[in-house]
Length: 119
Length: 108
Image 1 (cartoon, chains in turn cyan, green):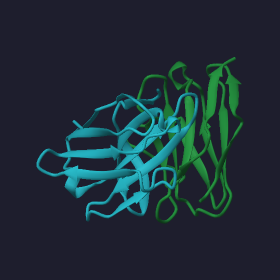
Image 2 (tube, each protein chain N blue to C red):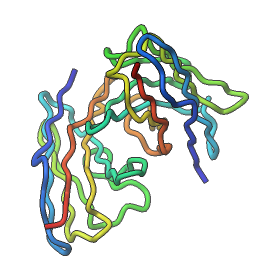
Image 3 (cartoon, chains in turn green, purple):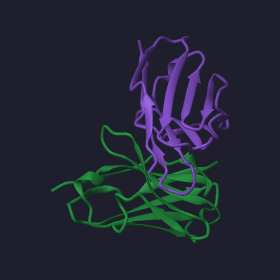
Image 4 (cartoon, each protein chain N blue to C red):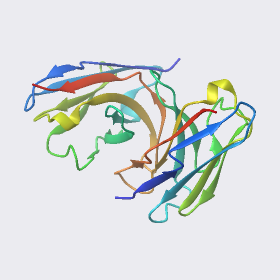
């Protein structure tokens, strides 16, 4: 059975940092393409970042230079390091498997980790 | 960045009725479109990819059509569990991949 479980969410002040982690079971992250997608309160879904099996990464313009996606093959996890956080980064962050680089849809999702940026 | 626009924002319908949701891209995305169902407190669920291919275990009452810039998700006969928010998403070429703003299907 495939499971994705996010952790690391919480309350952080503007300008602060937070690291989310996504623990995966049922498939190997190193052989797959993994994304983070977020949903701000009352808003729709927004793709944030992807890491390819070869290690290549992409970011939404809204987070480029502030967020870093990485994976830990031995733990079978994918992380999102978030720096210089802003109020507009407040959202529920989902980890999701991306089918492939040219089929960039998301077939498995976690339940999400809530990040609140507020003073 | 490709902009996706969904309509209507809210669709009110009764169980058993047919629901038709629209999604438009501001440039051609071929058939590189997915649809998701999102229930409150749950993870989004993939319904359709490739504009018209149902994902695993998705009931046949869900169907997708379209190509280029105009796409449709049809629910042939609404069931109680179908009242949710639906998003379309384009994945044409490399990221950024973008979602529509969502259509809420609620009970009339």
